[in-house]
Length: 332
Image (cartoon, rainbow, N blue to C red):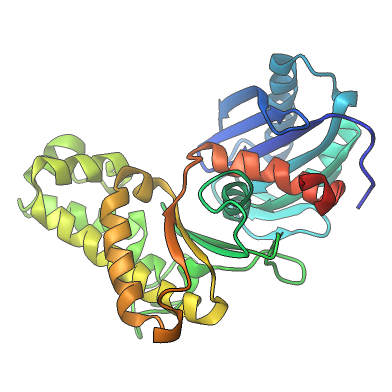
């Protein structure tokens, strides 16, 4: 990785499922500019990369920063990645294949660029500036449309040889279970993701068992978002609450195995479902961890709910760029 030039600012970019968010940070990681745009699914890779460049340019303009003042850019990306080459291998929501994100941004802005899985970036952001600040080992699980995971171990992201790892949502938990989007059967996502929860809740609403959800969002799974689920529970749909609690218990059961494997000092909960229903998820997951974690490890970790919200991935991406480009000493 190239050595950082004597510049002051870092750019983070979150290439999320429904939005693009760019943020500019000064040398002390204070946010000084940002720009958000909606993504345009299937608009084509070249057009999408041009929008990525334009969003960063707008964020720099908002911060009053010239491109030659940027030390590096970090991008949090969904989908399978080639981290060494800086290539997004596939983004189903955008229709990109083998997108050369690093090369594109380095050519456009003349500074080093790194990419990371978007959930990895979010966990790193919470490690540097949020609920897991200073942990030796933090494991994060972020249930949303799918279920993402990430781990920071002794100051660096745990990763595979060329790509990201910690695919907690694809740990098999139900033998002969339902088909998952990854092509395998019985993954955690099939029973505990927002999509799985929404499908079960939609069926309940169709049967007349969740009248408040039916009124709020109808029975179309696409309309049953995290906020609608939370509102239905608050309004008194007990069957919806039972569905969500069962999903959270599945997550807790799975995370107990992760704790036994990595012995983290922080288990971090984030994602859209947790943001809407933090107490419910914390209580159910905590109960499963207490029941299933090895006795010797039960008191060695704490559970924390992410603090940075939508800013976690974009902040973490910028901080990861600093880590990779300027080196760990720059973080002190």
